[in-house]
Image 1 (cartoon, one colour):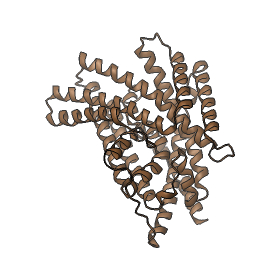
Image 2 (cartoon, one colour; image 1 turned 180 degrees about the vertical axis):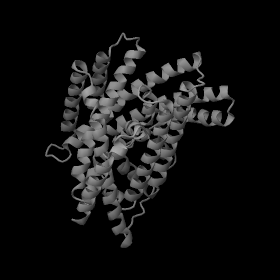
Image 3 (cartoon, helix red, strand yellow; image 1 turned 90 degrees about the vertical axis):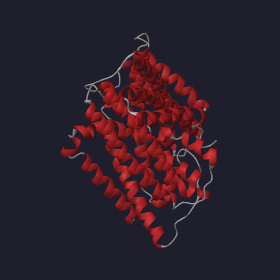
Image 4 (tube, helix red, strand yellow; image 1 turned 180 degrees about the horizontal axis):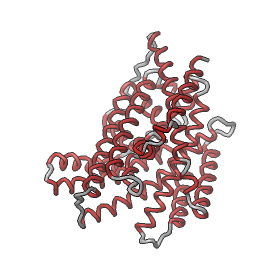
Length: 399
């Protein structure tokens, strides 16, 4: 009972704080909500069980490395914001061609990420019902796809996009409640010397390739790059950096609290495994997590559908309208839904985003060469090679 009360109080307190005028009205915080919504959205729901099952007691270290890798890719994108869009911008034909290729890669990545979001939406929507099966989850996913394409085709997404701050606030408040609940549960286990040191299951090359396939779970920071119509380059770079700091802190704390209180043998690796795990921590948490999942997945899917439609239209020279792009996205998404599992889609999305990040790293390296910054050339060149490796070798957590 006490843990339920603590969880609810944490949700209420954080929810109220996020709506205080000083926070809600801050331009930097508002700019942070877009990348923050993506970074700790879907990944937060699936990443914990995957890391514990694969890496055991070393899960926090793997989480820290994923966050560090994402931060370095974010550094490349922030460098591009400064060099390409700043007062002393350096562009040229090479940069322009690479930017076009990067936009195409991002548009493709968005298509897969929407499938990822909506398949998780379907799975969580039925997780606490008598219809908890893959068929019904895919049926819900398909229905939401059709709703989104109809709304996008007939009315556009402006009315739905207004949900973003609300959904982000709800999600962050519930995550705060989850962390409080886990902290109390962890403390009880530690005080009675019951913490668990799970062994490393996926080691060597297999462990590396699974980590490659999880990049999408810390993806989302790149959205700051495309908020130029609303925020200047300094605010976008700062908000991206802060969003990555906040999300990295949340992720690492979350995995530390999760990794040492559950036996690997009790984990059933499914997309909704976190719901079953949280039943043990506090009875109220599964319901809160499902609510957060539905809000987060839907808003993220709308945002990426809108972004993908705009990118495809722009890249096609307006020959493909956003409405037709939404229909294309839906067709591909429905095919992925009925032919692939969620963990496979996570791997596909990770590789698609890795391609985009790799190209952004190439752009940053080219700019660094022109700036004669040897250290940056080495760092961003290495990130470009890493992006290629992830594209080629990233594996599903079920692989």
